[in-house]
Image (cartoon, one colour):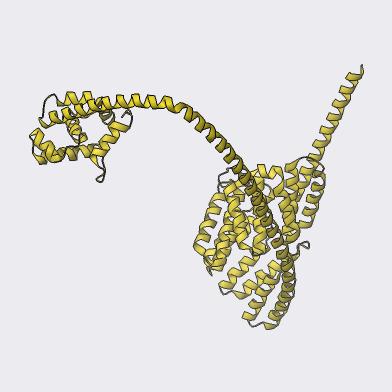
Length: 498
């Protein structure tokens, strides 16, 4: 074995080992992301741990898609843990990946997460903007993942109308979301990743909108569907138990409402990793106890609500500040890009102007050189045109005289002078009668109804009826000028097969 053969074998071996290592790492990343997906709802901290481990491996590879996927699951887990200020940078990193720019579904997932992020911080204008972009990216796609992402954004957009108590467009968007989600069969839906199992959310949003309208009876079927779907999808049921409680409160069954509020609290406390507070839930329980004159319990839950609300306010202040800083950063980046674009456009415009001036100077020079020859040619053409015009004028005068005399040779001579007329009229309608064509010829020459009647020895009423029938046959609108219509068809337009 010579040196070159040995070197070739050594390089091949290195490539095989490298490919094998890449496949092993990719397989490990995919496995970790699947675990992160499985635990999103049941253990947010563990899901975050798996996603971060996958990200550390992916960062060492050149696989942009897998890197983006790991950023997505990190951001998603942090959102569930309500660590929004930590989540946002991973959303931005994911959106900057080449794979995300090329893949509309991946981009839509990040934007959907961003929209949810904004909604939790009550930045509703930014929320609506993100969800509309998601809808634009995914609504026309038929794959089940895109359908579910589009449905969720439609529902989220609908929910944003409830902020301003505009419930008609809210329900329209929510109904559209539910209908869109129904296009994915259950057998397909149940095999999707957890991130696409959003049907429970869609029913929840619909029920919640009715609850906000104080329409508990209309809400109840959707509460049932939301609760059942959450159980099927193995989702936490805290929100759905709370919704049942809201329903019972509006139906005047306060003790039943308290029972479900307490079940919601208990369900939430099962997930020790859940860092969100229960301030609003405690406040509802407090009001419920007060309504049935159990003021001691009401006071207890009011204190709990006030205590947790202080935590929320401190967290939200930091979160909103972090998000606003990111929004300002995005705006500065956009302005800088606009500034760069303006500079590039100005340079391009300047270069274009220089080229134009150079070409214009060249054109003027050529024009000057050709001017003498053109003058001679123009003079010859002018002489020829004058001769032709003289002949045309003579022919026109002759046809007019023949028309006035109702001469039997009028139609034949008219066709000689206007050879296009017959062919183009027959292209419009091959079933024209000779009498109709002759009447069209008179009209084409500009004769009035009375003049045509006088020259052809017919009653004016007859000519009017004939003109009316012709217009009807040609489907002319009442405001269309018959003479102009004929001349446009005969003189300007090429014949078409009719």
